[in-house]
Amino acid sequence: MTKALESSVGSVGSGEFCFAHSATGLARLEEYLRGSGSTAAQKACGEGLLLYGALPLTTLSSSSLSYLRTLAIVGTRDGLVGPMSVAMASKRAAGERGGMGSVVFLEGASHTSLFDKNVPGLLSKLDFLPSSSREEVLVQLTSVAREWVRGSRGPVLQRFADRSAQIAAPLVKALELEGSSALGNPACNSDFPTNPVQPSF
View 1 (cartoon, rainbow, N blue to C red):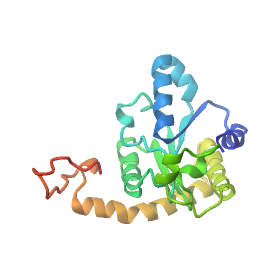
View 2 (view 1 turned 180 degrees about the horizontal axis):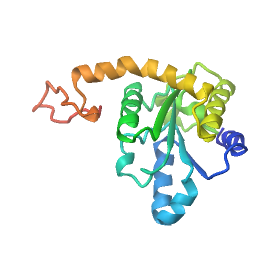
View 3 (view 1 turned 90 degrees about the vertical axis):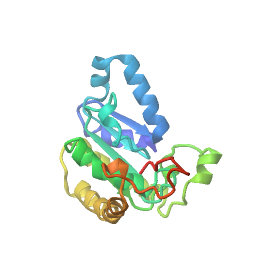
């Protein structure tokens, strides 16, 4: 699926874009860019960073990728990137990064819907079952990516962004209600100090 995506968007953009899947792919990309130096990194990903199945947007401010225009795409059936994390990233992306980052959901896609090859056993056990076929996921993914690569929010990307905001809104409200350290509010931890580990969301 990665090859299909690159083929689709490659014919649209004139600059250099980076693609990464999952937290592992993002970590490898950051490692490569750090080793290449800032000039090479800017040349490699200067036009933007497109992620799927990964959410770096809560930590990009301290990352070697902090200067990049970023689009994170996550399936609504992703069992490894939880909906609370997506909602949190969506909320923080616009505020902390000045609109440089965006998060959109793909309807019915799981984390492993976006794999090109056979899924490792552990990932398949942790992930949710997709409700959309690989072909349907690819249509959604390429339509959003192609428009984003053009550098403007057209009707397709706007429709996905609106739907994603609709999904995230009640989750963000819940996080704000109970308190969320990740959103800048003190989190309620009724188990403290017997359970001193603070939640990540």
